[in-house]
Image (tube, rainbow, N blue to C red; front, side, top):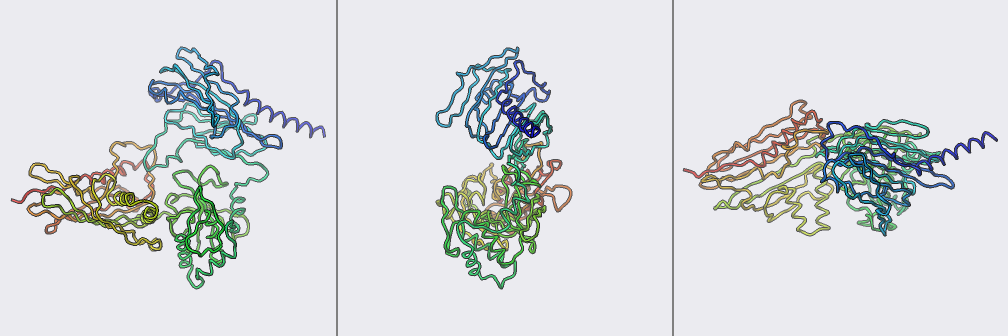
Length: 637
């Protein structure tokens, strides 16, 4: 009995100690900072340290989180002062009580000026306290810390990387009555001391955002999750069986779902045909109840266009599969641009993607992706790893799955344009057919459908113009039409087709003495260039592998002949494995009174390591160069 009482007292005082310790936190009277590396001395400002501490306690009489943030920033350039001299005492955006708030300025000579409490301002509505550093000069160090008390959050994301260097990042956690799981970037070193878990990282470089990179995933950050024992509800072998063992509906009943299946009339079909019929009917006839809308009870699932909560829509797929005796697995992935699926548990702060995988056909159903048909998974998770759960298998077994990558031949953007000039050579008439298959075709099919149903014609025409000619071409679309608009065309990857007729004045034609330059390269649409981005920090990660094929038929005007079309001929190719490389090739020839130009641009991989960046850059710049290329005309002699 005495031992038990002693243990209780020890636990009580340790809890009390940590709560009191964080509440009594204070800065050093004369702080000592890490030496600034030579490479960072020319930075406009530097975070000398960024220290954060979270203490969470949950029990019968204790339910709170204390969060401490302590930061010191050295300002090197005066123009940076306004970026960092305004501080809000808030954590995770939810404030219950600011326990402490202190700020001071440390001058280059060591003098310290503490900002008085009357400089702290509190907003009337959300009661957020803030302070503004005054009289700051280049060379000063701004130091502040605040402690807030708030309702415990079950998860959080602590981002330490900024647009300026961080010399020291530190994240401390203490707890009582909870389990605290931490997932940190590899730059952090973890340690435990006297009941504290401490993560530290040094010399974090400034954040650099790059096009076609996993910017969010690459951020130096720390994610934490808080759960209460004894059950870790977010472990995959608990989470998936608990929520996905059997389909469960809120807004309709199982007998209604069985009537729905019967009216689909799929019993005599093959598995592939059943899956296409199920997916096509649901995608065509159901939509989500969006934020701000109220879900309504459903009495007849076959009764035309209806809205369901996203969870019920997902479960409807599962129930139909189960009742139709189609073997399936619930699979979970994550956009490779955001992060990776953790192998042991559902990391709540990150956005996960839930789908069904059909082992017999090796294809996926994506209930949450309105645009995406049964077949490949969403493009963002290609090549990444996820987890898989088979509800029909005994035991809560969780398996790993690698999501397939669609080849470049799956997503093809193809166009054919006929270009003719007016007699006075001031106006170009362009008749263009643009088709898209694969991921691009499915997304655009869905997007145009949305625009036609919800927006005015002006927005629709602008979207057509951007898709077919890019956003940098000054022209007027006079007519347009669509082909293969129905969702059913997704299943056989039939291209979505747009036919347009447009007129361009001056933006395509330029006079140079007695020569006429016609910018035919512009017809394929705008392309980015990478001439300024000479170095690469991250690998290049594309949305999907894809192919571009364009054909331009230019009617040579009467009285003119072609002087040159050499700028329209380009051939650039990445070295190495042909099945994974990228290339740009354009050819041109004269046939009768027409100049025929053909373009082939292929990206066979979704990932190009930064070591191959220069080759990738060469191909991208070649495509950009082509859009500036012209055919040169001269009067016939």
